[in-house]
Image (cartoon, one colour):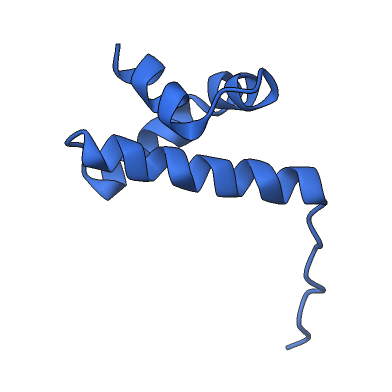
Length: 67
């Protein structure tokens, strides 16, 4: 079985993914399980993407999500 070539992500996408991972740590620190935090970020991906491009820190985005 041939391997599918791995897609390379651009720097902006990698930065967004790292930012979301940091948001996840803040959500977990606030009491969510890792699975709950991941599911929430996935369900609200567009909102989090907007927060990232608006310049919010991961901590600010997590606080806004919990408000």
